[in-house]
Image 1 (tube, rainbow, N blue to C red):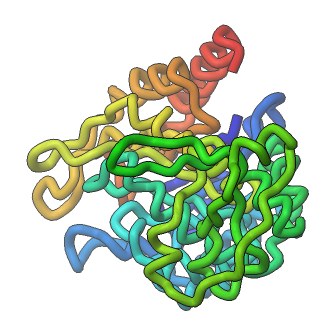
Image 2 (cartoon, one colour):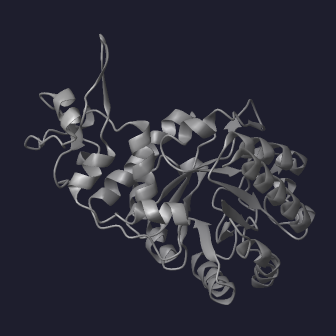
Image 3 (tube, helix red, strand yellow):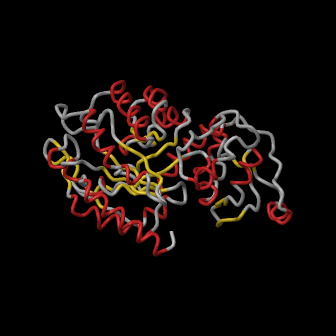
Length: 364
């Protein structure tokens, strides 16, 4: 199980070191792949006067110190395209904030690094819509050699990504079974594959038709691609990979999705647990239990109710996810950001133990 934990924002070096020290047990816990999380800049605060953090340079220095001293893998978020490259020198995972999950330039810049990309689902989007954000990263990474950073992902994900530098034939194989829909219904195109070496990112998801898909499927062979067309509209209308194939590609190319609740009226979020298996068709899924109890923009700051974190976390564990995200603080009531929805360190330990027990009981 992936476990992401840490303070919402880097309030000070002293606080970060205090929390990092208290989280050692999770990094040593059997069955847990631990990531330390904190933000160097909270660029989407409700009020312009709210605390944002120490900034890019100082924040990365502090995170690098945590990494060196404790041996933790690091996750932090970026808000601007220019931040991707310098932050990836420190962070094993670059997180795309929910509000920015559709920003193409940001996703492409992050995909240009060797870090794993964790895309948080926008509160305003359906889970099905997150397929397109994943595709933007996959299309970008398919055009270049991607090798995950050492220790950046769990063992299962590493195994799936070992072939990141594989040939286009292997990429084609991962997309076999793609389905094509027509006005008269859906037809299964036996063995489909993407065309040769991509000339640009657009061509990654482009699949070539076959004269006899069923025949090729029976033979277990890949269908030769026709010459690639330079017509972008043709590529855009081509069949997409099946859910299973896309999930495997996301694991291979280091892409995660995170559920953090959906907008429900004003100042509230709700978690539709159906979103977890839906998004899991596209990529490994993390459940962000603390942001899911947030109450956005209550007055000059966002509110929240951390009492409900254990309930939602246990529910997500029962549904089945690849990991959990918890923001934690030694004194949430006095935290400088997201205090109302964060767990204190003692609460975090109990919730992690409960979710691990549920997953073990259900065989996840």
